Image (cartoon, rainbow, N blue to C red; front, side):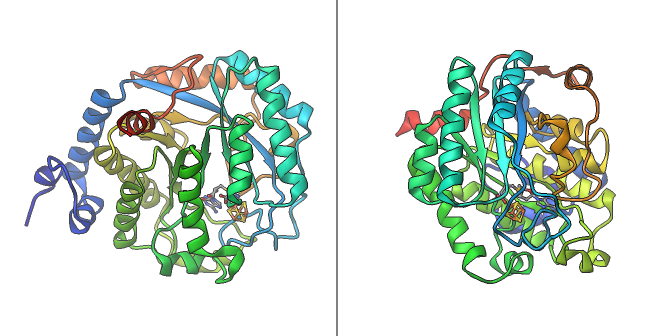
Amino acid sequence: MKTVAEIIEQNAFSHSDLVALLAAEGNDRQLIYNKAAEVKAKYIGNKVYLRGLVEYSNKCRKNCYYCGIRLGNAKVNRYTVDDDEVVQAAKYIKQLGYGSMVLQSGELMTPSFVDAIERLLLRIHAETENTLGITLSMGEQTEETYSRWFNAGAKRYLLRIESSTKELYYKLHPDDDTHSYDIRLQALHTLRKVGYQVGSGVMIGLPFQTLDHLANDLLFLQNLDVDMVGMGPYIEHSDTPLYQYRHLLPSVEKRLELSLKMVAILRIMMKDINIAATTALQTLRADAREQAVVVGANIIMPNLTPQSFREQYFLYQNKTVVKDDAFAYHEQLEQAINAIGCEIGYNAHGDSRHYAERNMNN
Ligand code: SAH
Ligand code: SF4
């Protein structure tokens, strides 16, 4: 049997190699973290890029079994942030020097929603002198919609596959046309075709999930040749169907450890992509985001949703809701980033190097 020390020096990884890495404990686990940090230092450096996140709307047409803002959750007060408030947030993001913003929302496909996002993108660019990189995370849309939003100035898109194993995917979603695995996968290909920097990812530590599934996910992200990844722990929400399986969940410590291992292993596999240290990590432990940066992540998405809406965007329970003033929060974040030997990449888009390389080679 190969040792972990041998596997991490390979250039390619089989499914069984990845399962062995995911199962590593103690000193072996530390070897993986050290290797990931070494790869990151060589290919990415110590800059952390920030994307100001605006949770634009919690209205959603879908019923994902894990998500607190699913259509079927009648307890949610539904909102959409006013354009003026989004533009104000965008200006503040620019002022903080973040260089990029992310607009995220539930999945809506109505013509009025599609028009509204297009108009909003044009307005944000006009009112921030075309300086911000804009990422969208608004679920599955038609090719026409993706193209219109791209032409209006969104250049990156995040669409997690959630789980790349079909069988597990359908334990997390109803088996119907609105939640089709094949359509979600197709949407990822469409985003690439339209020209976006494409991001995907999965949830980690789900009920029914095994190391086999997580190894599949790592290979899936590599085969799809993604430019960016956002993946983090699954966190239960009591008003969702998946909550009934909470007794099957790994402990919080285990979910954190698996999430950090996934980030580290992916960094070793995909050396020049952007990898986010997610908010869900921070919800499970205050310093987990910084730990993810130490073992390979290079992106953080501070929440800049207007305060009055934050408690309405609960994808999962106990989500960290920062009540501090955004500037005080920013100062704390900068200190935390500096304390681990990294620096914020100010006033830059921090685009995926992987995307740039692929387009140069084409
Ligand atoms: N509606 C869009 C974007 C918003 S949801 C979409 O689904 O693509 C963004 C992400 O939140 C989802 O991709 C999912 O991975 C994550 N999420 C939802 N519920 C979660 C939970 N209970 N725990 C952890 N992450 C969750
Ligand atoms: Fe809607 Fe996204 Fe939540 Fe699914 S994960 S219910 S699509 S917001």
